[in-house]
Structures are given as C-alpha cells and as structure tokens.
Amino acid sequence: QVQLVESGGGLVQAGGSLRLSCAASGRTFSRSAMCWFRQAPGKEREFVGGVTWSGRPYYADSEKGEFTTSRDDAKNTLYMQMRSLKPESTAVYCCAARRGIDYTGTAYVNINDYDYWGQGAQVTVSS
Image 1: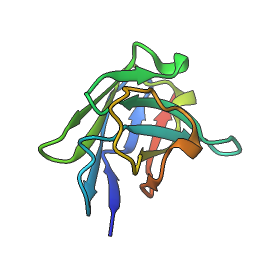
Image 2: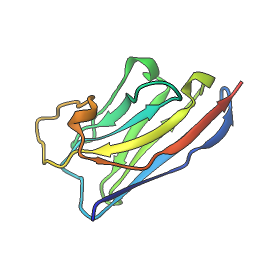
Image 3: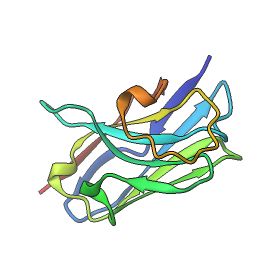
C-alpha cells in the first residue's frame, strides 16, 4: 500500500520559515515526479512546487524565490523549505506523486497529473 505522509507544518509568524517533509512508503518514487499543492480555506487546490525525477525543481510563480523543493531518493522523501512566509501562505499543504516512471523531465503542475496524495499538513502564518 502506497502512503505519503507529510510532516513539518505548524504555526509561524510572518517572515518565518518552515520545512515540510513528505515520506513515501510502499514503493519508490525515484523515477517519478513529486510535488506540493496547497489549499486555503474557501479556495481551490493549487500547485506550489515540484521536483522532476532527476531532481530539477520547478515552482508556481506565486512562491518562486521563497520556496525550495528537493528530494532525497535514498530516503524516498520530498521536501519543501519555505522562507519569508506570508499570512496568505496559510493553507493545508499536500504532497503528491505520479504513478508512472517518467524520464522526460516534464514539470507536471495539474492535479490530474498525480496519482498518490498525502493527507496534508496545516501551515498557519500569523501576521
């Protein structure tokens, strides 16, 4: 059974930092893209940042420069370092992974591109 489990969320003041982790189990994702989405109250789920199978990061324009995604395939874990957090970054952050093996290096950003999802980690940024 494939599982993605997020950790590292919490409450932080504006300008602060958090590091999210997503530990995968049940299969390896070393040849698949993985990414982070978030959903704020009353809003649709949106792409935040991802990593291709080769480790190349890519980001939504909204957080480019402040968020850094990375992966450790030996640990089967995806990370996202978040800096200079703003109150509008408050949301539930979910990691996602593709089922298929993909050597194209495509930067997948749509919800339907991903097959496995974690339960999410709450990130709250106070002003």
